[in-house]
Image (cartoon, rainbow, N blue to C red; front, top):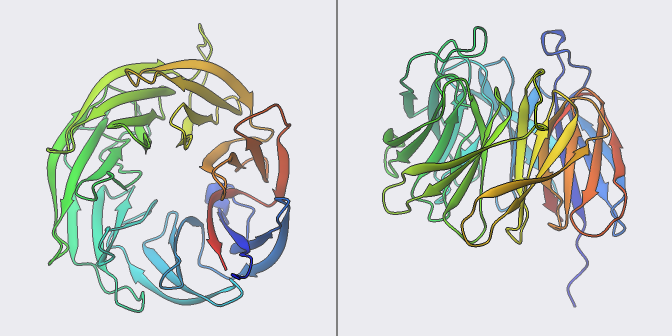
Length: 351
């Protein structure tokens, strides 16, 4: 009989005054069978461990550091605790995301401030080598006076085939489709989707069974529905839906996104008014309808992700210093899972 598994949650945060950060290091929590979180470890980390990736097979956790220029590697022991191993340069400024290639040979990192995307080789033991591919993204600055001064890639995400890498660029109102050469790590642009001026594409999510992609427009608080061509990697925008109430004319700042495992809903966090917008997805067309706007129960909900079991939505409220869990079905109330300073990313591992 197999031993029962235990799930651990790893939470990254902002730590520096520049980011109004109040956090410290990377926090590790043990999740009980009832879903309760218990603090296990505070691991030292360079400033602003703001996005994480867990490689459960190799037993490594990777982190990029907001406003810095490095990606860090941590060893994960049998109890799920982590220890800092080393840092590698990302040859750019403010790395904000990281995605391994499907073959596990390369780690791809977008540098937000410097507008370039890089690849680093991943060794058999999970150790990262020096940057191999380095691609500067093109495009004219967008209309926003302070947040669109040039290319600002904010995320990298592979399509289901593992052939195409999608990169929303907040600074130039584009979503780029890249290819990564398996032998050299070189990156190249194969397609470009142009969003409306000032949209600020930030993050995206894929439908679990259809060739549909949902992109968050951070600066105009919109959800952009796109059809995806798996043969060419091209995105074709079909619909732009507002994440805010009808007639809203205030500050706009949408951030995180997640699609329900059954493909029926998509969730977008809104930092301007501390809500999560819930959109229903039409099963035939993929188009969305704003169904509800739920309070995030904390200020500045920067990050959302599906819970470890896929039956809930976790919201990291950067300004509220907490993590709440929202059931996807039923009428149960959201539950406070962690009181933690400036949380901005959550990943899981089973042991």
